[in-house]
Image 1 (cartoon, one colour):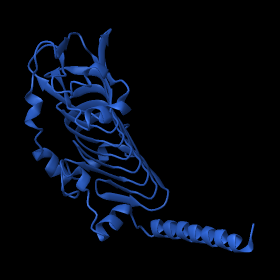
Image 2 (tube, rainbow, N blue to C red; image 1 turned 135 degrees about the vertical axis):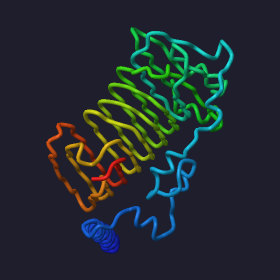
Image 3 (cartoon, rainbow, N blue to C red; image 1 turned 90 degrees about the horizontal axis):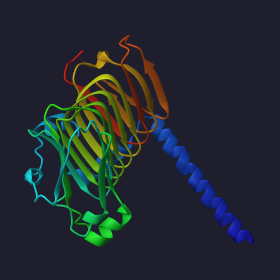
Length: 294
């Protein structure tokens, strides 16, 4: 290798090393990605459909109204009813999913507003009380539908308590209102999720590069994991109703009145409740608020 190229690659390596050292130093001093975005005027415009003010997000979610399209009920060939359902599993991407209560007796799945080109690639079936819904060849969806994939409406009998409800949304949108389940699992990849008034004993939330907002109650334990996305949750009760196992990378983690930032911060808090909240925040943003003060 010529001497000039050696010098070039050595300089490049030095620049990369200096950059990493500066990032680590900034994280140790409390600098966060949201602070950088704010300083340069980069807002969460991609998620403006849900809320604009992060600090007052919990007020915004209470005022958030789902689109009127959730009231659609298609023809008999587009609406399927399932009785005796106690488990619900939804694994889709590039699709908007609306889940809501209604006064009927069965769980219904309405595909009338799903793009006609895609209906054949949406699979759903019930087996021994478990209703599973998933997209087949989901990477093909946006290309075929030209990004107009439509939306799916799922109705659950009002007051019905599911044993387990699981929702995995890749690059789609999830809107849930008034859901009750012994175990509730919400996973958001690069998409968006708004979950209003949930009730569960065990909550498991994962947010990759997307954004989620949830409000409701947890009676036993909660697990929250956030990668580079943003997750906000308002829970019933107060901050001392839970024990905590907290881990924060270079992101921002706020639990009630306490904030944790910096490089690889870990903390365990035992309030003697037996209700564990396990939170792992990578380089994203997690904010947990409570309806009652300390």
